[in-house]
Amino acid sequence: MFIDYAEIEVKAGHGGSGQVAFRREKYVPKGGPAGGDGGKGGDIIIQAHHNLHTLLDFRYKRKYKAEDGEKGGSSLKDGKNGKNIIIKVPVGTVIKDAQSNRIITDLDADSKSFVLAKGGIGGRGNSKFATPTNQTPRYAEPGRPGEELSVILELKLIADVGLVGYPNAGKSTLISVISAAKPKIADYPFTTLEPNLGIVQYKDYQSFVVADIPGIIEGAHTGKGLGLQFLRHIERTGILLFLIDITSEDYQKDYDTLVNELASYSEVLANKKRVVALSKADLITDDDIESIKNTKLKNYDNSLFVFSSASKEGLNPLLDYLWLQLNYEK
Image (cartoon, rainbow, N blue to C red; front, top):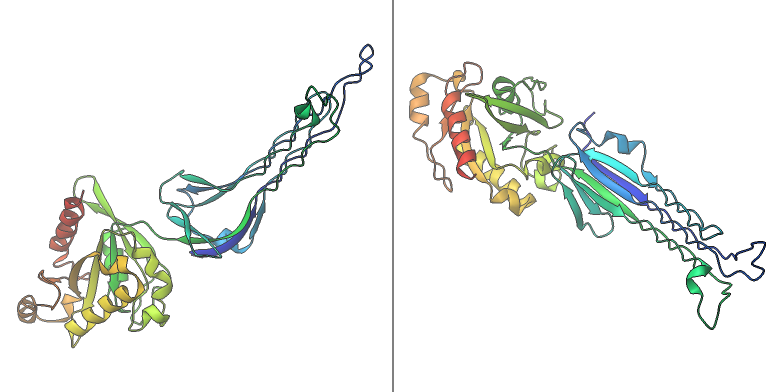
């Protein structure tokens, strides 16, 4: 099951308290202070790992507590530090403060880590408080509490190209043809219920990653359909590939609706580079295709690509253009 959102509570370990103790040796009847320091509490560390692809585990475990530091001992022995807890998440996970929604960190690379909650410092033992005027201090510091907070984990897929289109526009069929991804495909809306990633092998040992999300409908940014909860997965992409069904009665309206939904959701998406392609070209005649290629969309300067995933006609020019655009920015 693909889960891309979770909320958890983390609590770092408390620092151990310092010890009040004195030297008690056979020939030292009035030994000085010998209380050790308390150990530091364990940290909560969050780390990205390439083998993870979902936040499903966090549905079953929501609270994480690191080990407390040990209390200081006698004979100037310090307490042991508490063990850290490392929470592993998929690459591309954004960590937000659950109260303010502020982004704490973005784990956008494998093995990237962040100390989410710091363990409390151990208290000093009474040996640290001895002075010329007070050689037998009878107090020590308590350990400090560890940090604790509630955080939101939000997974955003990392891809080069994001597919955008109405339900049943042919996105899943396209990704299944150009990559090894095998999404569910059927002739009805919302076949895709979760994001899919496909690696496109381009010519000689080159590749790029394409992300397919559930179809977008008008009003998606307000929660209609399924698109809203998955739009975050195309925020990281370099290019948005808009797919419009070639049998649509109004290409301009379809394009404007998609652009409006993206802009209403995120300024980041609104400013992404766009490529527009008409899918399912095998459903119309060659003469109609030639006339359609001359179609111009308002607020879009480039020509429309026309292709068929079924016959693979027009796919190579589209992939060539995507590759050039991706590498133009590097």
